[in-house]
Image 1: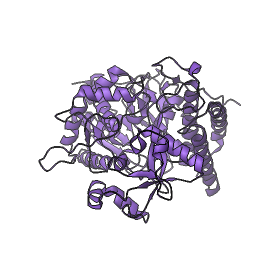
Image 2 (image 1 turned 135 degrees about the vertical axis):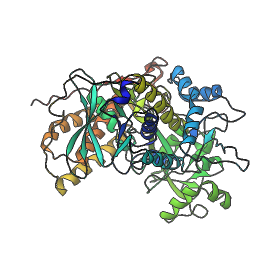
Image 3 (image 1 turned 120 degrees about the vertical axis):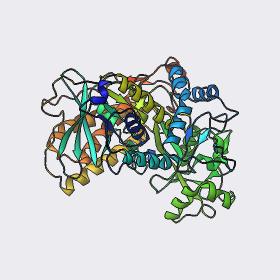
Image 4 (image 1 turned 90 degrees about the horizontal axis):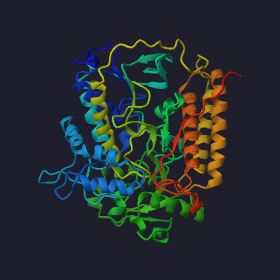
Amino acid sequence: MPDALSSAEPVLIVGSGIAGLSLALMLEEAGVRSTVLSKAQTGTAGSSWYAQGGLAAAIGEDDSVEEHIADTLAVACGLARPDAVERILGASQAACRWLLRQGVEFDRNPDGGFSLGMEGGHAHRRILHCRDATGRGIINALIERVRERSERIRLLEHRVAIDLCIDSDDRARGVYTLDLQSGEVELLRGACTVLASGGISGIYAHATSVSPAHGDGIAMAARVHLPLTNMEFVQFHPSALHGAKGVLLSEALRGEGAKLCDAEGVPFMHEYHEAADLAPRDAVSRAIGRHLERTGAECAYLDVRGLDVEFSRRRFPYLWEECARYGLSPDVDLLPAIPAAHYSCGGVHVDDRGQTQIPGLYAIGETAWSGLHGANRLASNSLTECVVMALLSCHNIVLSRLSAHSGRIPEEPPFRTVRRPPDAEVVESLKARSEAVRRSVTQHLGIVRRTDDLARAVREFSAERAAFERELPDLPLCPEALELRNLLTCAELVAISAHQRRECRGLHYVEDCTDEELMPVGADTKVRLTPVDLSG
């Protein structure tokens, strides 16, 4: 029996989304115990719960894995790694079968076959979905399985990860966490540690999730000097419901004939792109941004009134439900829409099994850069990646034959704060500073970027992060301080990466870019965080 199966320490998984829960269940099937950390209630604390689209897999009779690979490479603008794309998409059918065994109920046609959706960039219908709330459907099934297997899977809710614990042998030994209920700091040790805490949508003023990711895992990895790859590529969803949190006006609506328009109901997409409302996601986002800048309007609108009401209610029940919460009816009202940060194509650099450069430390899901997405993400490939990379990481963890470690664990954690409850004034100040960072990130690192803004962003966020790290020891330990710390870290990483890329490519659109500044085709940007001198 492998040493991993008898290790006194479980595998520690930071994050309770689809990637983290899938890995916990796969490890349990292999006889390996795990501990799963969640900021709030398991499964609902991150972006997975709010994923509306689906999971891409070439399972249709007229489809093939080779065509799925070709579509992914085309959208990635020359930066996806062909070997990673082949490896991950080649296992997509196995990922689907595994999810079905966990009880996930994908939509089916009357004949019993899967109802496959069509999304931008795909040559065939290959999107498995649970109506328009696929993330919720998958998470609910996984949580039910996890709770059935509590002997080997331990759930720790209301815990915020602070920093990684690296021993004297430079091996990951766990994570320092803050218990939000008791206020206590605890080192949770693991035979190995897996970062599955999501991306960085929460560093922007508008995000597509009710609980957007603040880059916790990415920031922790950066603080132990791991390389981050292609952090500049942040995908925006073109049409989040303005004034609501976590409500998307699905691109499938435009696929069925809905139109983006102004407040008077006048369509405008034809002014910006030859494909009008069916243009690619990044082009639509840029068009809306330009239209708002040109007109001074606060938001655009989506006109869904021309769709058949019965079909619309059946195909998009979540949309109707959420619109009703905000006093809107898709068959009567124009729906206010604004682009919102959605998905990070970059992240912690990992190998083909999710292993980082630090022994015993893995990263999967949106936290990681696996080589799949390149400069732009093909719709619905992300959920596929979550499950497949969990599967590949699980195999590697089990085969690594984990055993007892001899490295010395630091007596003190690598962060310093005052251990006292924060008062209301301090909390409000930290929240206000976080909102200011988000506004600045949106201004400098948004859908359309400018060279001077990128240089300004590097200077601003580097200085702010350094200043806050020096200020941190005098602040009470609270989630608001930890959130601001991670926001500043990720903002600096995106700014540096964006400033390094002297070209327009995929999601990185620089308005004043010139041809002579182009980087070599296929070059990735890599960045490491500069340590802050705290001696003074």
